Length: 480
Ligand code: NAP
Image 1 (cartoon, rainbow, N blue to C red):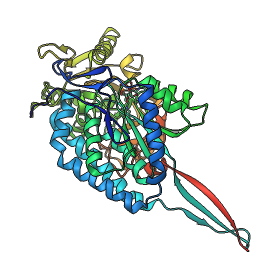
Image 2: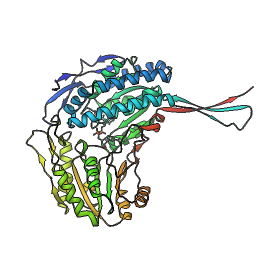
Image 3: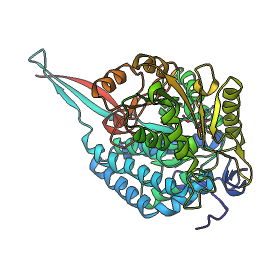
Image 4: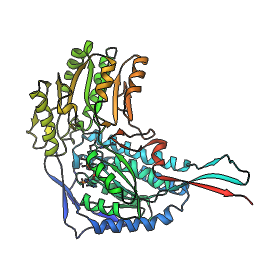
């Protein structure tokens, strides 16, 4: 299915707007072609969206949770009905292989489905009283207007992981997708319209992130900002939130270690490494960024991993047989090149890959394995966001824990061992919010997803995901 170039719009208070605005081109990184444009919105549209969401909050929050569920269930079904259209658009705007895009649409829909159900279970509490003349209760209230700012690498799932719990709990939403991949968000907005959400409950603004963020940070009608993206921008938002003590949830960068102990099932560890590292061309926050393998199985692991990596097919994501699409843009490609060049200049060896690919006209990099790396190399210190696996030799479980924790990030980690005692004791030492034990793909809608240290604040998904969008109101009731 070809995606036609089109002018996409913003949606504020139930109206498609922005026709008069300058536009931003959305470029397919596989071939450099423009696949669509969105309006370059700014303060004006952000203010309008805030006002619309604020007005809509009064009636949306007054609905019963059961009423709100109906809208979310319709949206879930519409996403599944439009899976192929959403997937094609996603692949066109950011290069993800089409089968991964289809998978993301399904995954994104699970957040709407899960939180549609979870919305009915936002329970308050009755607490045993210390005084016979009092009754003590905790009531749950939706936070209010929520601004959701999302990255380009999961254009559907990062939005629904925020919209689902926000809408289910009674909040209204302003979506601000990444300028690299906003088209999927526009399509999602169309589906919200078809699902019949009342006007102003869901709004979409595109354009200048700094101008839009300034408004949502400074306007006191916005009570919460939920952000997924880089740690750098997350820190800016923390600073900006201080003046109004605005509630924040932050899903930030990662730098995941993957540890393979010498009693691991090596084939399983190789499979898990490929699944974790090469999904979305290595452009995921939880992808294994650095691999630590115990010395007894190091050579075997590197050999088997390299063979599997050589089988990965690179190309335009619309080709059903492609495993690795392009990087998102030239900056992304330059970063990957720098990480590999820095490693080799300090003594590492490229086992397979190690070069940019220019023949397709896009920003591609060969799936790569680098061995004999050490902690002094940039690739072992910074998020690479590309298809490069550096493998370092370690001696012991203690060294594995020390190396894994040697980072300001704390999002995801992976451990491969068949020994329950070793695995348990190693994981207990790891400062990461998510751990895959013999599992390279731990994400799901019903589990808490989020990071420790500089990887973020709060959790998305699972029971914890909806708590981020409600306030506890303690009510002490005096009896006559
Ligand atoms: P990014 O540059 O931080 O951008 C993320 C979003 O923030 C985009 O919508 C962007 O808009 C907006 N933004 C940029 N500057 C801003 C500012 N000054 N104020 C407010 N908003 C601003 O991140 P990215 O490159 O899109 O995404 C990659 C990063 O996201 C990686 O670090 C990855 O690890 C992280 N990530 C984390 C998770 C998680 O769950 N922890 C999941 C996915 C990705 P514009 O595009 O319009 O500038």
